Image 1 (cartoon, rainbow, N blue to C red):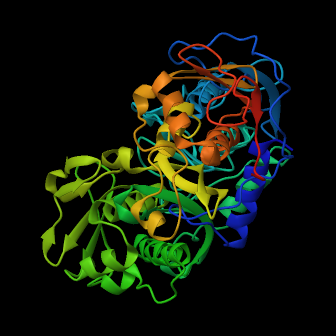
Image 2: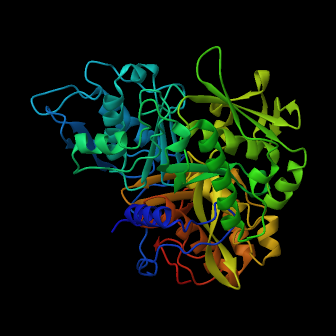
Image 3: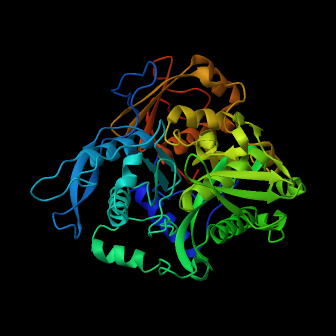
Length: 510
C-alpha cells in the first residue's frame, strides 16, 4: 500500500471513529517502512540541481462522469504530470469540468458550463479538500448539483491524499432542499453506487413542506476548522455531527460546540471551556443586501480567557469560526462577531491585517490562515522522532520548505518538553542551493557552509543530522531515496563514518 493510501485509510478511520489527532505541536507515529542503509559506495549518475526543479512523480487518477442514463459514475483514467498536490487537484478538476459528452458519458453539469471560482478555488489541508465552483453551478437543479458534487468528490478521492470533499458555489454552501436550508456536508467517494439512490438518501433528510425545520434532526459529516496553538493559523478535521434541527441557529450552535470538543481533544484537557459558554445569546441569522445570509455571534468580553486556555489568539479563532460556519451552513456568506456590543472590524495577527467592512467576516479573508500538516524528524533522547508541524498548505510536499522547517528546530514549547534540533541553528534557506527529482530519487544540493557546519557538528550527531533530512523528505515528498551534493559535487565523508556520496533511504529506526 502506498504512503498516500495509508494516510487516506487512517484519515477515514479516525474521522468516522471520532478519534482525531492533534493539529500541531505533538509527536505522531510515522509510517513504518523497512529500514535500509545507504547504497554501496558509488557516486550518483545524476547531476546536482542548480536551483529548484520539479519534484514529485507522474501519477494516474480517475475521472468520474455520469453515464448517459445518469444512473452511475463511469471511471476514466487520466495521467497527470508531476506537480505539488494543490496544482494536481486543480488540474484534475479542470480536466473533469471540461470533458465533453460522448457515447458513454455526459458532460458534468449537462448544458451548464461549470468553472472554478476566484483566485484560490481549491483548498487542501490534511486529507480534506474544499472546491469552490463558479456561480454557474447555482443554475443547476438541486439533484444535478448534488450529482456534480458526488462526481467531484469521487474523482478527487481517487488521489491517495484526499478523503473528504466540500463543494461551495461562489463562496457559499448550497442547500439541498427547496428552501435552501438542507446542509449537504462533506462528501466521500462513491465510485460504485447508484446516483438516484444517493439523491433519495439526501432528500430523505429534508424538512417536509409546511413543517418546522427546527424539529427535523440532521446527521451529516462536517468539516470543523480549529485554531492552532500559538497563533500558527487554523487546521481542519472531519466529524459526523447530529443536530436537533436544521435551522441556521441550531447548525451554528452545534458546530461551535463541536469546535470546543475538538479543542479539548487536541490539548488533552477535559477541563477546557467550550466556546458556547462565552456566547451572550443564540446566533442570529439575517439576509444581506447583496445576497447570502449573515450569522451574528455575540461573545462575552471575557473571551480572552478562552483564548488563553485554548493556547491561541483572536485572529485564529475568528478565522476558524468563519470557515466552519460558511463551509457547512447553506447560504451563509459572512459572519459578524460582537465582543459585548462592539463588532470586530480589524483582524491583526501573524498573517497580516484584514479589515472587515461593516464587521462582515468572509472566508476569503482568511485564506493565509488555513495550514497544512506535515511531519519533520527531531531528536528526542538521542533518537529521531516524528513531529507534526503546521506549514503553508501548498508546501506540505515542498522539499525546500520542509528543510527550512527542519532548520527552525523545536519550538519553544517543544524545547521545554525535551525536543532537540538536528541541524545547526546557523543554517538558512540560502544554504539550499537546489532541489529536484529524478524519478523516485530526490537530489539535494547544499552549500559548502552546510558541509562545514556538519563537520563542526561532529561524528556523534552526524547520523541524526543526515537522517532527519532523509526521513523528513522521504516521508513527505514521494521519494524513496535522497542524494546529497555540496556546491554541486558529491563528498564521500564529512565528520565521521557516513558515506555521503551514496543514496540514503528512509530509516525510522535510527
